Length: 259
Ligand code: BTN
Image 1 (cartoon, rainbow, N blue to C red):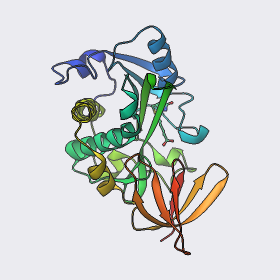
Image 2 (image 1 turned 135 degrees about the vertical axis):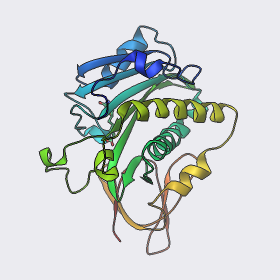
Image 3 (image 1 turned 180 degrees about the horizontal axis):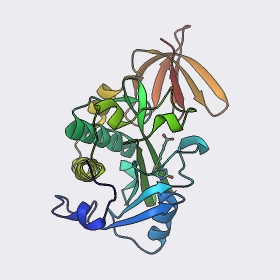
Image 4 (image 1 turned 135 degrees about the horizontal axis):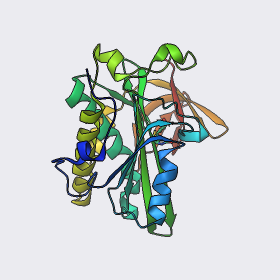
C-alpha cells in the first residue's frame, strides 16, 4: 500500500537538490496549481518553489484544454526564473526529467510525443504545460506544470480511456507518488544545472521522440498539416516533410500519428 497524502516534510526530507523542491506547498484541493504558482511569483517566491495539489478542480492543459486531475495523481507546478536563452529548452528538460523519473521509480519505458506528451504503450500518462512572462529578453518567471496519471481510474473517465493511461495501470501495481515527485524534482534540477553549464539536452530529447520518422497530422492553430515528422530543431520546433518534398517548421501544435 502506498501513501495517500503528500506533505512538504515528506517531499523535502533529505531531498538532494540545491533549490528545486526546497520549498514545497501542498494543498488538498485547488482550481489549478498554475494559478497559485502565479500568485506565489507575485509574492516573490524563491526559484524552485513547488505547488502541489491532491486534486485540481479546473486543471488546465495546453491549447486551453481541461486537465483531469482527481485525487491519487500528481499535479504540481515549479517556479523558475531562467535566462531567456534557456526558455526553449525548458520543454525538453521537463519532458526528459519526467521520462527519467518514471523509468527510475517504475521500470516502465515512456516515450515522448512532440512537443511534450509522455506516453506509455502509445497512451498519454503525463502532460506538461509551461507558462511564462517574457519582456524583451527578460523572463519574469516560468512556471512548469506537470500532471502525471499515477492512479487515474480510467473507467471513471470514458472520454479519455482510448488515449490515456496511468502508471499503476501500466506497472500492474501501486506506484508511490512521493517517490515519483522526489525523483522528478532532483531530475529537474540536475538537467537545469546541466543547461546552465551549457550542456545540451537537445540530442537526448530528440532521440526520445517517438514521433520522428512517423507520418503525422499536426494541428497548429487553425491549420492542419500532414507529412513525415522528419526532425526537430534546436529550439524545439518540429520539421515536417510533405509529400511534395517541401518542409514546414512548426513551433506549436498537436500531433496525431497516422501510421
Ligand atoms: C497538457 O498535456 O495539455 C498539459 C497538462 C498539464 C497539467 C498540469 S497538472 C499541474 C499543472 N496545473 C494545471 O492546471 N495544469 C498543469
